[in-house]
Image (cartoon, rainbow, N blue to C red; front, side, top):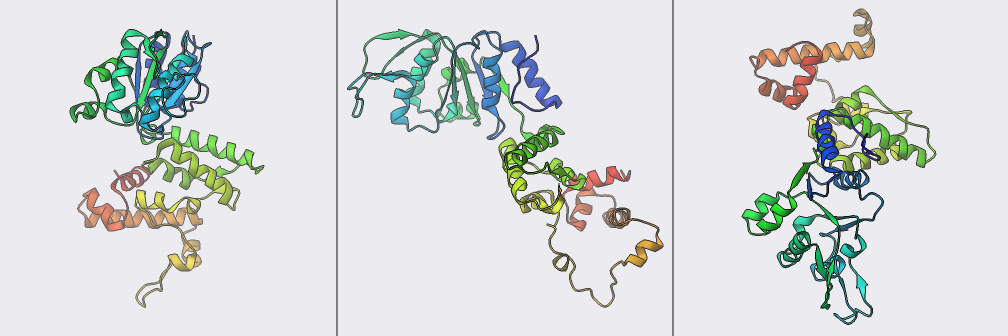
Length: 338
């Protein structure tokens, strides 16, 4: 049966590996630990896990363990009895009870206090909980899925996370790859987000020019999918043309890939020394070239010269022209200079 992956966009090999594991583990009740950098979309993956499980008709209950003060987290997870503490004016069920029969998602599990980790371990092993201030043991039937952007093995070694809980959670590990490892998924997501934000603002759909696409693919995306969506929302508001040009992209992308930000012509072209002459339209016409070909030809000659001066050492050549080594290699591949 085909997986229900609603909300997850991408068909890269890195993501396909995740989907393969997801398809195998979803129908089971095994505990799953989802790891990945912040902004990769771990909750989307966990929701897909629930939708493809036998528990899909039952509740899916998420809780961010890092967003709730540790004094309140136990009550949020296990509930409390009336009078258990100040402001406990009535009995209240916790998330484990609300998720009975379904799935509870413990997001940012690495932020949880050690004292509370003991109670989570008991809930996992014994399938039972006790409300704060209560004396009755309650049985709960929940599937536990946890997620973190921390290295939990490192946290165990440092004494900040219980080893027994780590192994109980890590029955099935699922690593969500960072955006920089997902190749052309970057452009699929960019177009999806840009189209959605343009539509929400009643604006005609924007296209992304080829140079801007190349830059998006080269950027390292430290904020992953969340950062990409934020960029696309910004462009849907600030972009003036009918397409996103390279100059519309944020300065940090230029800095990351080792290129100079595009600004006004008078800022790009410094006063020319007497011994230097900028190419003119006449030069371009003499070569029977259009602007794009002419600029490509100039860039190609500079890259060849840099490689010659660097004796073929790509790191040095990249330094000479002021770009990253990865950017240089892409440009050389494009021109069949490798």
